[in-house]
Amino acid sequence: MKFVDEAYIDIAAGDGGSGCVSFRHEKYKEFGGPNGGDGGRGGHVYALADINLNTLVDFRFARRHHARNGEHGKGSDMFGAKGDDIILKMPVGTILSDAETGEVLYELLVPGEQVLIGKGGDGGFGNLRFKSATNRAPRSKTPGWPGEHKSLKLELKVLADVGLLGMPNAGKSTFITAVSNARPRIADYPFTTLHPNLGVVRVAPEQSFVVADLPGLIEGASEGAGLGHLFLRHLQRTRLLLHIVDIAPFDAGVDPVAQAQAIVGELKKYDEALYEKPRWLVLNKLDMVDSKDRAARVKDFVKRLKFKGPVFEISALTREGCEPLVKAIYQHVKSVQKSEQEPEEIDPRFAEPLPEPPAPG
Image (cartoon, rainbow, N blue to C red; front, side, top):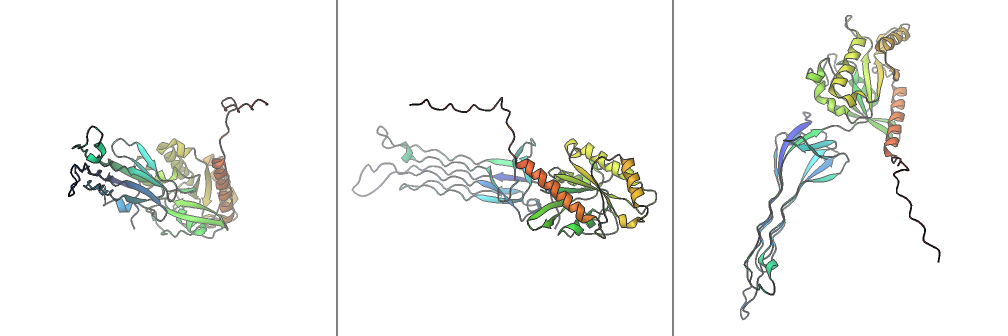
C-alpha cells in the first residue's frame, strides 16, 4: 500500500430540517390549535483516531464527506428525525488544519479519541412553538440552520518514541529489523526505504518502545532533495533521535564525518526544535572493520565530528552491540515519559492561599 501522509478533504455537516405549520383537524373538534413539529438536527461529522490505520490513503481520492440533513417537521406534533452522523477514521497522530489559513484545528493523539469537526445545523421551530395565550393560531415557523462546511488539510505525523536518522544505506532498515518486529525492504542500494516503517521493540514483558525508520537523508534535503525531506515531520514527535552512521562505506572517497555533518546541518535548516532534540550517535557496520582498528577509527571519527553525546558501536547485521543500545534507549524513553507525566511545580508566590479554618464555636 502506498504511504500517504498528507491529504485534503471537504466536509459538510447536515442542514437542519425546517419547522412545520399545521393545525389539528378532528371531527367534532373545532379550533384544534397548532400541531406543527420542529425540524430535525443535521448530522454531525466526527474524526476518530483509529490505531489500526497508518496512512491517509483513504482520503486521497475520497475528498467530499457530507452528513445527512435533518428531516422537516410534520403535523400531528411530529418532529423531524435527526440526520445520521458520519465518523471519519484517521490514523493516530493526524493533524487537521484549515486548508486556507493553515490554522491547526484538531490533533488526534490518543487511540480512540473522537472529535467533532463539523457541527450539524439545528432544526427549525414549528408553529407549535409559537402558541401563546394571545396567539392561539400561529402561522409562523423557522427554517433549519445550515451545517458547517470546512476545507481541511490532513497531515500525519507518526507517533514514535525513537526516530532513525542517517544517510541512505547507513543500515537503518537492518537495525530496525534486528531489534523490532518491523520487516522493511532491505537491499544493497540506496533509497530502499521509500516510506516510514514503525517497529515495536520489546525489551522485556510489558517493556517496549516504538521506533520509526525513515527514508535516508542527503545533503540539500531541507530544500527538497531526495525523499527524506518529505518525512522529516515524523521526527518532530519522537523523544530521541538515533543518528546511524556507516563507519565503513564501500566508496573509498566517501568521508563518514562529512556525511554526518551534512545530516546535522539539514536538521538545523529544517527545524531548530528538531535539531535541539536529544540525539545519540550510533556507529554501524563495525563488522566491516578489523577488530584491531575499531577503537582507533571510532575515536578518530568522534573527535573529528566533535560529538558530545552518547556514542554506541554496533553491527546491525550481526546484532553486535544492539542489546546494550536497546536497553539504554528504553531507560531514556522511560525517564522522559515519567517527566512528562509529573505535574508542573507551582511557584508558591502564585499559589492560591489555603482557606482559613472556621472560627471556634
